[in-house]
Image (cartoon, rainbow, N blue to C red):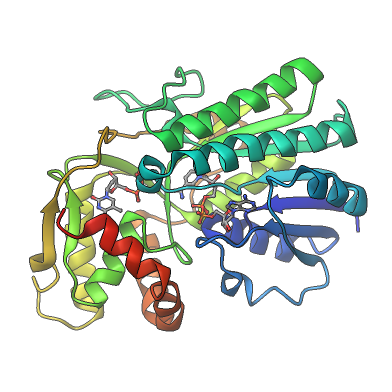
Length: 350
Ligand code: NAD
Ligand code: TYD
């Protein structure tokens, strides 16, 4: 094997697409997927590649530093792509300590183990998967660039921003060959139905109300998850240590417009009369401190590394809806058990 790469959080939404891409494209790399399998981690997401000879799954917690050190000794990693995180803003509002532990301390553990193994060896790579939410809310007409000041507004984004600062500190203090990328909102297959798009798809299928926060005026900039995975691949292989890249597809949507578009698409796919799904839209109490707008400028990534998205939003959303309709068992498994309690706590009486 020419390289040994640790991917954390590979059983989650984005991580599963990153692992699949790396395992299939680089048969001479050993890809080690480390995941704790929280509610968001699901090995079903990787059934198609789990028996490939260059893939290894390790169930582990990034908060267990001794185990992380042991894995570095056993697998002699050349690179780390760190995706494991608590990722849902609404959960961060009620459970911030878990976000602080996983997203900040967990990142620090990976930095510590990387530095102990590599020092400042420039042939190695530590790659932090961050989010555009660390920039806070974008003012009208402006987009986040890599030099926009960090200004997180939610406990989730505060924990991710803190992790980014630690990554930068390790690059600055110890020369750890580190990279950071900050992507906009992702959508696509394997997305846990707590986030806007898969939650709406699930509720449309099951004829449940579609809870739109506030007036639905908030804007998000959406990217198909496989395009995020291709950007991660390019940045991991080509970027210079110390660099930061924004990732996004120039695709801003007001939540209410997106939900209405999805309703029309689902009516067609489910052969329901036009307007059936839209009747399910219900405006609910807004999220506290809800960031109004995210908008990302990924010019640097496009011009430095030649990356561009492979699908339009319309194509990506259709692929996503088709995937959920073809994978009813996946959706039913992840929405049974603890999900119902979460859903009721989050949405009933709102
Ligand atoms: P996800 O919630 O779907 O998956 C997170 C994964 O991390 C799960 O498999 C979970 O089991 C694992 N995990 C959680 N705590 C762990 C721990 N202590 N030890 C080991 N594994 C643990 O998240 P996602 O949406 O795929 O996001 C992945 C990364 O990308 C995160 O770092 C997130 O901040 C970032 N990101 C997400 C988006 C988005 O739109 N979803 C956008 C930009 C950046
Ligand atoms: P989400 O998918 O949670 O991502 P993030 O908060 O990280 O951007 O939410 C996307 C947008 O959709 C955000 O403005 C909140 C809104 N939203 C709803 O209106 N209803 C919902 O049920 C959810 C989960 C989100």
